[in-house]
Amino acid sequence: MTRAGVTHPHDRYLRLSALLTVFGLATAVVFTLRSTPYLMVLFLGLGVSCVVAGVVIFAVLLIADVRSRLHSVVERKFKAGDVVFRQGDFPDRLYLIGTGDAEVMKEVPGGNPVVLARLGPGEFFGEIGIIGNSPRTATVRAATDLETLSIHRDYFTSLLTYLPSWKERVFEDYRRRAGAPASTGGQPAG
Amino acid sequence: MRRMALVVLGFGVVLVMLPPALRAQLADGIYQPPKDYLLEWVRGLALVMALSAVALIAGTLTAYRGRLAGFRARLLLFVGICCIPLPAMLMSAAVGLEQSKAVGFCNSCHLMSAFVEDMKDPDSRSLSAVHFRNRYIQEAHCYNCHTDYGLFGTLEAKVGGMSHVWSDFVGSTARPVRPKTNYRFTICLNCHGQSSKFVQQKDHAGVVIRTVSGASRCTECHSRSHAGRTQRRPL
Image (cartoon, rainbow over all chains, first blue to last red):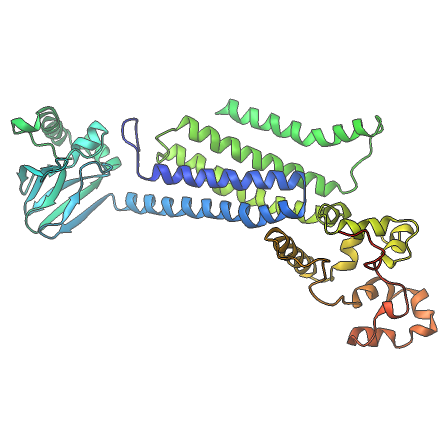
């Protein structure tokens, strides 16, 4: 579920799919009202193609969304050096570290990324974007081979209601990480 | 949501009722019912469905701006993009193809207008003009003689015609227009072959077999199907 502030990456493709369908339907309306050879070519050639393209795009996005929801809680492994997510990405999941270490880095325009924190087993990252409904505030990279438990954003909020003690900890960390400026040692983790 | 549905429904009813009302007005107040009720209904339904889908998509894009990936927006878009447009497009195609049988459809292409003028010329002696003048064919005059019967007859004719339109669009059609293939005179037999007038004519003995085999053409004895190039208005 998305709220104002951050746009889901599917959003623009859904808009494209909708606009293609509207164009195809417009040719259908014109062709139904007035049938001429050129309008027939326009309808059968361009109109039908646009509607089919719109449906295909929508179906692909729907399948991707359903698949993502079906894998609401999954184990994800990363090799040392792999990027888990990048600063500015859509905040789709939260990660709990099982084994290994992850580095939280701030991208600096025109410079090398600054490492803000190193997180270890038992810690989590990726909550800032989900709770604050904003794009990822930092890049997270696997410092060593990393095993995580990845939770879909929609199920993360449901999970918090069932685990009040964890909710307190998550929000405490969120306030600390999101509120503290990066220069003073805060740890924005996505 | 409910109000939006009511607006769409009201709009649809007006749209369905409008064509007969306009037709009645144009006919000096004397209502002339449409000849093909089913076609009129399918046309109305196709228009209502297409416009409803457009309204639903536009409404969703506006109301859920920046939140299209949410469940409700996706559900509305699913109806607007997948559920309504596909049947609407099918119905539009059916209505359009049915309308394309009319002489007016062929005549809307300037390359065909000389042939249609000749057909409607009361002094012309071409076969098409004779058939038109005597109402041997009630309607869809071009279609009846230029389309093979059978499951794919209409489709073949339309695909052939569309290739002509495309050639004309890209400017590669040679003038004057020639048929893609030699005319199949077996099409004439679809109407004439079983008529007693045709069968009783002694000159027609063996004509059917020769026509089917392609050895004989109706225009060998009867006048031309259309006026010759010199008699037609130049394109």
